[in-house]
Each structure stands twice: as C-alpha cells, then as structure tokens.
Image (cartoon, rainbow, N blue to C red):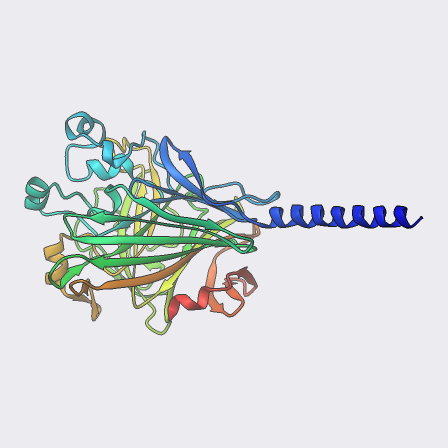
Length: 419
C-alpha cells in the first residue's frame, strides 16, 4: 500500500510539473519572428492581444491588428495599391518609370504605414536632390534598418532596430515593446548626431492610415488642437480647404466658401489637403485617435508634446493621378512632428516660428536625443462618434467619448512618455 501511495504521489508531482511547464510555456511570449509582408522583409511582435509588424526597409511600422476572437480583424495602416520594393533595390533607371522620375520616387517605391521622416520633413532643394541624391522626407525612410536585439519573456516581447543616415551623419535606434494584457505598442527612439557640429533637424512620425479603415463620412479623427492653419501654398488642384486660412479645429473655411469639418474623412470624389495644428500647450502630451465605428476599431497614439508639438494632417482622396498613384489611393496622415510644414530644410529654418512655436529643433554635436510614444488599438461600439478628450494615468489611457462615456485602455507605462 505504501508503494502504491508513493507511486501515486510521484505521478501527481510529475503531472503538476508537466502542467506547470505547459502553463509557463503558454504564458511566455515568443521572440519577434521574421516575416514577409507585402513582399517585404519584416519582423512580427505579438502578445496575447495584438500583433505588430515592422519592416527592415525604411523601418516602417506597417501593421497593428488584434489577434483575439471577436475582435476587429483590420489593419488601419495604409498599404499602397502598387507593388512595394526594398529601398536598397531601387534603381532610378529601372524604377523611375514606375514610381516617378523625381525626388519622391525612391520613397514611394517602399513607403507604407507609419514611416519616419528624418533628418527633415518635406522636399529637398533641387541641389540636394541632383547633387546629393536626397529624397523627400530625408534618409530615414529610405535606408535599410538592422535588427540589433530581440527578446521575449512572460511579461513582454521586444525588438531593437536602427539605421545609420550617412549623408545626414545621424544614427536612429528604435525599440518596440508589447506588454502582456495590453493592446499597445511602446516605442522609444534614440537619435544620435554623429557629426562634428550642432545642427537643425526635423523629426516627424508620419502615421498614415488607409482603406478600408479610412472611409469617407465614417472615419473620424480627433486631436487636442490649439491653433490650426491650412497650407499657405497651393497644396493641390483639389483642395477642400481655403488656402492659408487659420481656423479652430475641426471647422475650417472651405475653398468653395462652405465650412468643412476636418475631423471627418472626406466624402468628395477627389480631394487632397494639408493642415498644420499646434497642439494644446496646457497638456504635457499630444495625441490623436482615429476611429471607424463601422469596423468597431480605433487606432490612437500618445506622445510627449515637447518633442512633437505639431500634428500635421494630410489627406489624399483619389486626387493624385500621376505614377504610381493613378487616382486610386485613399490615405489620411496624422503626423506628429517637430515641424508644421513640408518645406525645404532652408525654408524650415528661415521660417523659425509659427504661432510663437519653433518650426524645427537642434541637436548638439555628438549628443543623443530620446523620445517615447505609444500606439494603441481599442474596440469601439458602432454608436461611437468621436473622442472628446484623452487622459492618461497610473492605470493607462482613458478615452472620453463625445457622448460623455469613457473607455479604458490598459497601458501601464504611458505616464513615462511625458517625463
């Protein structure tokens, strides 16, 4: 009888050990996996709620989706309808007829989703393009990024990747982390000046969303804007907004005298616009939310306002007919930035300030600047009409709806981004 009891005891211990081992392995998240995304090389991070994919080419964050049952199965980011290639494979002679024989071609060949603009946000001068081969929005989104570290444990999964910008003499390093039980992705970026002189620079997180998430008359975009203005130059032949008009978001004077509500995705057959928003100086953080109630999905970002005091709003709705656009793309860019306009670097520096706020920042020789921000997904009800306010606290992010109801998004480390 003693032997039987001992055997049973040993079996129970073994069973418990197997159960514990199985539970632990299930609880532990996997390290980031190398994947193919839209014919590009990428890395996928996944926790128990969401997955995020980043690309080596340009470093773009190209996908953020829920993975659980009963959750929206939609990637809100813009994936262009044309074939995408790695920036290292771009050959002007071969690819200019496809993507454009100008300073945009190389970026358009590889752009998608959330792309970084660095070391400037805008267009190069003719001399920079012809002599230096500098393309729109700088080197950051058109160089190959290298993975330096990846890890996973029972609490989080993370990836560190970065790139040298040899012509700009900068180095960018980005860390992306997903934590267990949170539908969020934490991002830390470190920018190092490897040059021998202090220099001005622009730094923009060009977060671009597209169809089916962006739908005319349905998708709504909310921000804590303080002062807003339409581009003071002719942005396109299909502008909905009055050129150069200052306004209080979201009510903007229209090009045809009718007031346009900027927070609602355009319903026009063709339109293309750009506005710059100075974010509320009374908040230590900036944010935007983009929501499609039909798909029951919200994408949002929160960042430190001192790093990115501007939110640049770019809208493209079947208006660009040249290659590779061909009048087929719908996008909405909510671009948090340290500069309001897509100027040349010279004009950006010469402008100096807009609304008493600098239009560029400086980085000292040999120094490193660090910024933090967080992106999040949230399932919303079909009667969701917009965000009144976004608050952050010890428990995470609270979205106050226009109807006064509140939604909480678990985000345990969000307060650290405003320090």
